[in-house]
Image 1 (tube, rainbow, N blue to C red):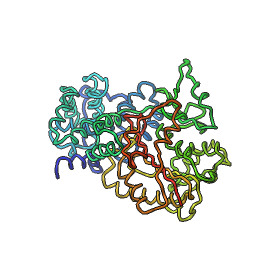
Image 2: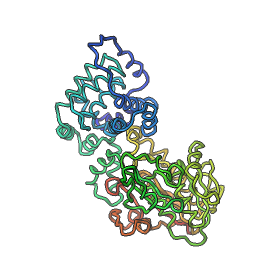
Image 3: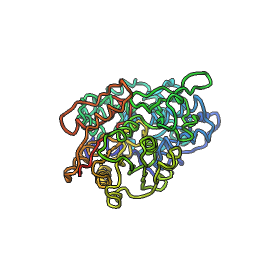
Image 4: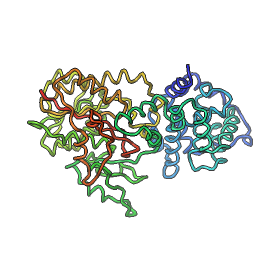
Length: 511
């Protein structure tokens, strides 16, 4: 096994589980109060507990942290600190592991996972946050004693002091110099698995962008995104929401960059505190997700425009926007989702859409819809399950969970879903194939594979449609036109557009 394969295995598996958890408890020893530093503060404890939940239960940090903060009454600056500490550590885990590996006397996968998480949290404070080094080390040692035990505290102290003796820039220079190749150097310093780094480079090239943008893309994935709201047309007026102010008179929302339905929320504002969000007239939705949904609704049709389908509707963000757009255009929406618990989320998301617009919210296998309802729909959205490599900035832990083996299962499912959608749409109707992944295997190659077996489908100019739905006057860079499929499809990027890396292909059934 070469060094790159070892890096990928460590990235994918993270760290050893199971028995190591019980070993961590064995480190607890009794010490006199004078020998033991006080327990660390609640914010650091909360961040540590999030990392352990993510590791032990494969949980998502963005689902674990907010209720934990509410339960423990952690608010204001402490909540912000805990959030940055937890999310930042997860995003930059690969970078910190590369640094820690040079400061620990044995392989990191031989450390108890509890200890390794403590070290990662300490490394992020020392190298990635504005925390004085002495305070970062002292507090992290206290966290180790409180949550893991006194046994490894001396080692944690020594390792973090070694980490802090070198600046982050010097650490990154050293990692680059010792890496076997440029891709591995970028992966380690940019904190992405090697296989994902390589795939993102290929995706940039495939969408007509310079591969020299790769470092900027990795950095964008490591930057916390702004919270963007969708103002669902006809349910709430954009100006009403934009004019909403906090008690000090400061505007909490500003217009989005691309989508006329997008409003960017000021930092520190809870979306749920806004009335239109709590009642479903608005919602949290990435601006790229809004753009691809608007594009499907705006694509010219031949013939009737009465019945729309969201084939993979959970958790419901795109379905809610589609429902609002359908109501304005006199169409009805069917929202299909294979998982019952996600069907409930879709139903909740559609609660503000006029009842007469929502024909059905149902649980079913999207792969069967084309056979069961051939030619029944005018517009179909296929928001296909994917690796989620386009949303790594929102799901920081997912990059360490995905492996190349996931692609085989997902691309097979994506192919079946797109085939079903093309059967479910009528001749003259339109299908939007969407993924929150730029990986070529999940985007262009899936579409090409389906189209090779059909002579009744044409690829539409998705770039032209997206430009038509932009905020008036906005000019968007969609990459070079290579004269082929890449010049028709839309691929958005965090480092270029400030959105998730959403992909859109538009297809028309011709016969």
